[in-house]
Length: 248
Length: 390
Image 1 (spheres, chains in turn blue, brown):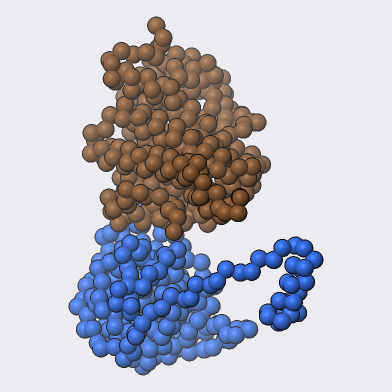
Image 2 (tube, rainbow over the protein chains, first blue to last red; image 1 turned 90 degrees about the vertical axis):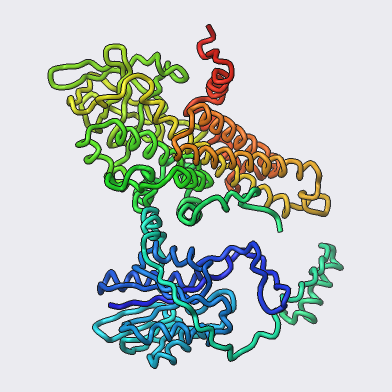
């Protein structure tokens, strides 16, 4: 089975995000980047598919040199090789998706796996856009995946329940939390990942179709109201719950 | 934003990609698989045995042993980072790895016959076998050269007699590295579990390292085959070479324990309200936090530099003594100061402070006491050995 996992890197979940000077990008100074956590589910699912069906896993990433460390993490988890399409601009989701598609059009892939979204910009467009560009079916937010021959059965999260769908290979799957438990890389595999190839290709940096006008931090919440435990304070609390919060 | 997980002098920038990735992987493992269970085991005085297999699966044992024997073929910085992350969890878990890697796999790799290497190293690396190291005796701690455990050569091998004490993992061990005197000279032997005359009762009622097994080894006319001696190495140089490996790892481990105490203190000081504000606004509290960060940073630099010298082959045992002595001392002081910052809460198992503090009391003493390391460095300065007091 020819498995492709698209990965990206995102700021560490504990990062305190600052907006950059241009007001349109984050200030990445001192920010630690990690493998997008949803992409870890995609890598793990790729490993499980290879264990069950054999084949090879290629990681595919659009990004700059700094992405290599996180690509290595995917290789340490067990992927066989990687392709890094060099594009520092990453103008918008469509621009990235079309560069992914450019690479994948030439391959005989069976399945493309991605995280359901990256945890920084949250657009959740990559999987569906890529599938459209490749002319392949897409199942998003998948929590369980079964493949038998070319038949694909997937469970996906929907509001308040699960939906079970069927499609066929080749297809694009986006991974939701719960699909699997990503493994830690074994320490010797971290060393071996150094020897696995990361092929670098020049990106084409297609123009953006959506322009970011500004990034804004949420407004600071004002401090709450502290009421004391006197009978008056409790009366006031009840009044506020009734009239302001309207919860009782 | 408060500084936690401190790397004040950006030592991270001196690490390569693999070193960083190993540290982060072990950190995630400790957070997800050790921290959630460790307090319960500590309170109950039980060892989380399932961790042995997990460490084996992740490749945590024998990282500096060549791959052809099942080891990781990694450098000493990597080994150090593993120790730091494990002891951020608990000194007992780090002790498991110190003993398995530095005190059992290292001497087998260095000193045992090729057959025994091939037989034991892969099993020890995978966690399918546990090892222990028998040097200290009830009456010979800081003075191992005075040991009274003996080996006598027979037609078919050797007969061992004596008793060892304070042996981490002794009761669990499938294989023991035992040091004993043959014709008055210290030699190393391998004793498998189940040899007649060999037993390893557990030492109970500890107030420290409660999530770790500590044992006696009893050797009563215990016969082992001729192949089970380390053929070449003679004298205390053998056990000391292993201890240097382990002490180096401990110098990193202690930093992990100190970082855990520091992180908890920063978190506590910035959230604990007294006199209508966080206690972090008090000068006396800030002084404590600064002391901890300052000492942790110095300790990180010591161990980092020592690791690079170790890999270059330019380190000296006296330098290992300085790192072990300084870093464990500062970690124990950090734990005590952290307990002060946490006030009464510092004694509860909700916080890791008291567990680290109690553990570090042992770490300060084992693998060469603080004072013995002082004398090693004193001897290095003056050329005058002050060990025997004579």
